[in-house]
Image (cartoon, rainbow, N blue to C red; front, side):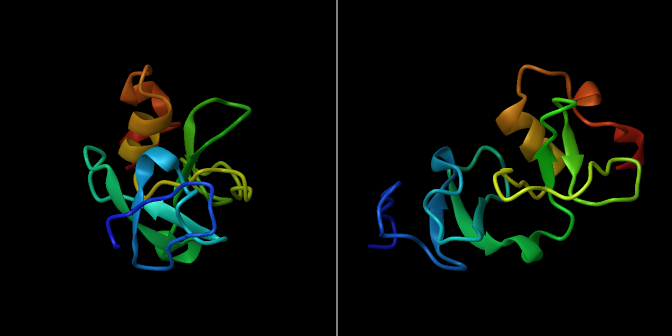
Length: 112
């Protein structure tokens, strides 16, 4: 059913279908990301990367959340296919770097 999530199997969700954020992007078809409106939600929706605009991801070099863009105060270059993407810096920091203070989790929080 629509509430059934099976991670790591061939039963993958397409665009607009529900996904479990605890599984990362594993519930979604290839090239889609699982995104939530509010980080307290466990159920998200599978979206294409282009639907996210300038999504956020964790820079492996800097170990902070940066945006998928080349020019701008919070840009970290283009995200790689293996980077988990988030619609907001709050989701990126809260999900991936929750041990860090939000003010140090992104390059320039004043630019938000």
